[in-house]
Length: 148
Image 1 (tube, rainbow, N blue to C red):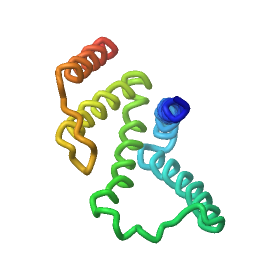
Image 2 (image 1 turned 30 degrees about the vertical axis):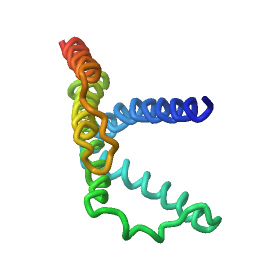
Image 3 (image 1 turned 180 degrees about the horizontal axis):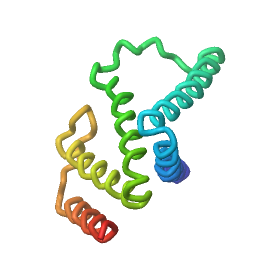
């Protein structure tokens, strides 16, 4: 039960962070443009994770020696993150945090359902059964209600 609760809390923490990130990048986008927002977001994030990794390497809690085993396409996560931050920096000032986040989530969850259904990129296969289709349809209807 404890691992489930930890997973739940980590997932919720990520959602809260994304909820904060959307308006933060929107404010930056308004002040310095979308590219400036992406630069500050990734630049500061890169400095922070560099410090964490260096400390982890020094203490022996991190090991990057197997990096060559990573599939080439997995390295696209960084550039895709630029699209995430850039799209939020663009959309939040124009649509508001709720609408921008809702569109982001709809795109994310619908595409993720396809990834799960087909097992793309080494993910476990989770068939898009009737229950999951109903959930996806509910999400789309909810998104439409939010945008109206």
